[in-house]
Image (cartoon, rainbow, N blue to C red; front, side, top):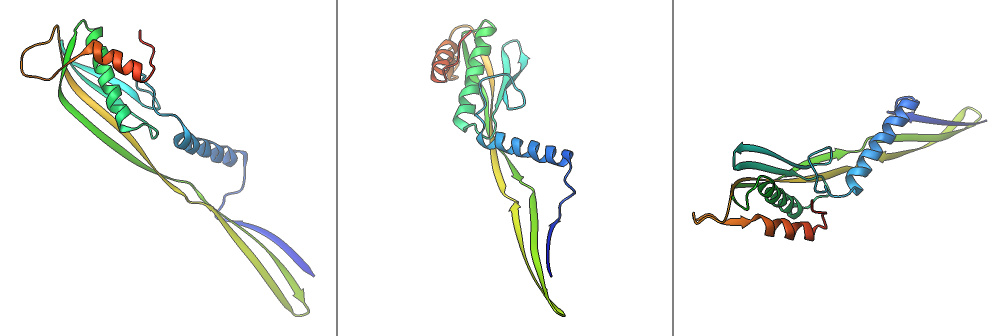
Length: 184
């Protein structure tokens, strides 16, 4: 007499909901791992820029990247947004009075699944059983998300106040060209 059995352990019964959840989680991981770097955009789900006006000519500007964004890109995009805000508010130059770069790290681990299958053979009063367990998942991925922020003071004309001052038109044209961003 030969018995064949299959057993799944540490898994909930397969339902449409479980399949949907696994598919969604897998899609989410794939998006994080093979997606594109954050584009130059207002802050959203995948990152982007934001700003807070602190005075008539003072702004705090931030750019947050996703797991595919390099630190240099985050620094360039916060500089680009600083130049854009300067021009948008009628100024020509800006100085950075506070600058910060950080990198957040997130560790994502995929679920571990076990699948055991085996067979049993009986000979008279004895039985022989053989089983194999396969493990999948359980992989960890470290995702690094850079962000950069500037606090800027805007000026009309280049002041002689000892600060290192950027020409907003020059920065804006250079960075929109470098990243092939359509200028408004």
